[in-house]
Length: 516
Ligand code: MLC
Ligand code: AMP
Picture (cartoon, rainbow, N blue to C red):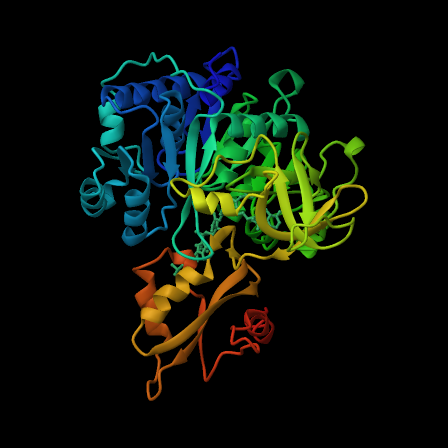
C-alpha cells in the first residue's frame, strides 16, 4: 500500500474533476476558479519537474513564497514526488533564511522573483542545486519550467513513517529546530479532524471553507488545507486576510478557521452580524489563546459558538472542543478534549502525575506526534519522557471530564497574532546593539495581536539609548512580527535572589502598555 499523504488527498477529490476546488477572493484576476483537475494536473507537472532533477529520495524542498494557489500546488507536488516540504514564513529576513537553508540543506529552494538575487546566492553557497522562483502574479521560473512537463504522474511510494514536511519552530535557547512530520502523522490528524469536526461531503450538502491563513504553518497548510482537500470541499481563497472582505464572503461558506486576531478584527467591523454569518456551520480558532471575551462577543454578535482547539508544529492538533452536541458543550477559555487516539496528560516538574484540576506540564502521545527535530537527536530526547510522551512546554489542567484548559507556558514564548516569538532570539540581537548593557523581551497583552513583543533595555553607563533606532536596526535582521512594538529603557531589570531576571514582574508592570 502507498501511504503517501497525497494519495489519500487525491482519492478524496470529487468524481467530477471539472468542478471548482478553489475560488480566489483576492490576488491577480480574482475571482479565478481552479478545478480539481487543475490541482491534479499542475501538481503532476511540478512533480515531474522535480523528478527530472534526479534528486536523492526525500530531498528537502524549501519554499519561501507569498501565499497563492500555485504555492499550494507546489506543496502537493512535493508530497506526490516523495520529497520533504519545508515552508518558510515570508517575513523571515535573509539572515534567518540562511540559517534554515544551512541547517536543512535543501536540494531545491523556491523563492519570490524579487528575492532571487539575494537568496539564490545564499542557497547556492550552501550547496542547494536548484533555485526556482514563484511570484504572486502567477509568474516565475517554477511554473515556466513545469509547463514543459507531462501532467500525468504516479505518486511516489512512501511509508507512513517517511517524512512529508519539516517545520522550523524557534528554540527557547539557540536557533530554530526543524520538527519532522511524517506522511502518517499528517494523515492520521487530518482523518481524525474530518470526523471530529463533521466535515460534510458533497452528498451531505458540502462544506465550503474560507481559507484566509498563511500556508507556511500548521494551521493554514495542514489543518485548513487538508480539511478541505480530504473532504473534496471547495475553498474560497484569500492570499491576505482582510476582515471586511472575509465577512462579505461568509454567506458563501460553511467553515472558517482563524487565529484569535482574525476574530477580533472581524468583530471590530460593523458589517459582522447574524445575517452575514447565517449560513455558516462552524467557526474554529487556534494557534493562540482565544480570550473568553472574544468567544462571548462572537456568540452575541453572530449567534455562533467558536470551537477552540489546541495544537503545535510538533504534534499538529492535540485537543478540540466538541463539534457534535453529543460530545458536550464548547466552552470558551478551554481547548476541549484530547482528540480520538491521542493521549494527553498533566505532569509536575519531576514528571509525577497530577490529579484532575491540578496545574502542570501538558504532555502528549499519539500517531500525530512528530518524529523528532531534524539532526538534533539530543534535543529530541530531552523533549520526550521515558515513556515517550512529548513535553509540549504548555502548562494546563484537565478536569474530571477530561476537558483541557491551558493556563500558561513553561517555555519562554510570545505568541503574537498567531506567530511565535522566542524572547531569547530577539534579546540576542538587542544585546549586540551598541550601548545596550542587557535586555529583556516580554509579551504584553495587545488588543489586536493578543500579545505584543516589548523590549526592555538597560543602557551601558554614560550611554543614552535611542529606542527607535534599535527597532529600525532589528527590522532588517529579523522577521517583522518579532520586532518589538515598543522599546523601553530602564535603569535596571528586576531580579530574584538568584540574579535571574523576573520577567513576570516586567510583564505585570507593563501589562497596560497597549490598553485601548
Ligand atoms: C504582521 N505584523 C505583525 C504580525 N503580523 N506583528 C506582530 N504579530 C503579527 N502576527 C506586523 C506587520 O509586519 C506590520 O509591521 C504591522 O505588524 C501591522 O501589520 P498588519 O498589516 O496589521 O498585519 P497583517 O498583514 O494584516 O497580518 C496580521 C495577521 C497575520 C494576523 C493577519 O499576522 C497572520 O496571518 N497571522 C496568522 C498566523 C498563523 O497562521 N499562525 C498559525 C501558526 S500554526 P510594520 O512594521 O510594517 O508596521 C500554530 C499551531 C496551531 O501555531 O495550533 O495552529
Ligand atoms: P507553534 O509552535 O507555532 O506550532 O505554536 C504552538 C503553540 O501555540 C502551542 O505550544 C501553544 O502554546 C500555542 N497554542 C496553540 N493553540 C492554542 C490555543 N488554542 N490556546 C492557547 N495556546 C495555543
